[in-house]
Length: 68
Image (cartoon, rainbow, N blue to C red; front, side):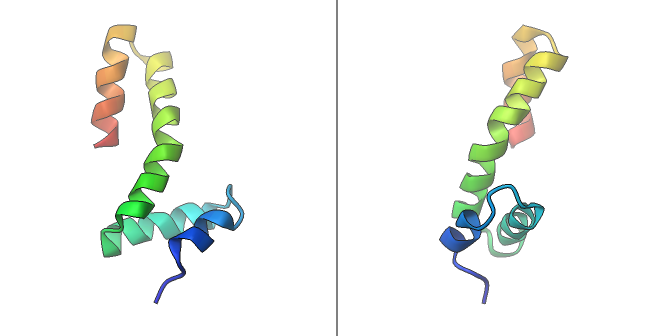
């Protein structure tokens, strides 16, 4: 059985292994908490990237599309 999600999140917040563990939980176990953790971290980064690389009017739609 895998580690409790709370323990994974608390351990070394910037660790690539943390993100790998969360992605595996989403893929293999359909873990909604793991997805929420990933979304909360990466959604603002994706949105900021979209704003920088596309027209402002398209950025919001692009960010939402990438998050799905």
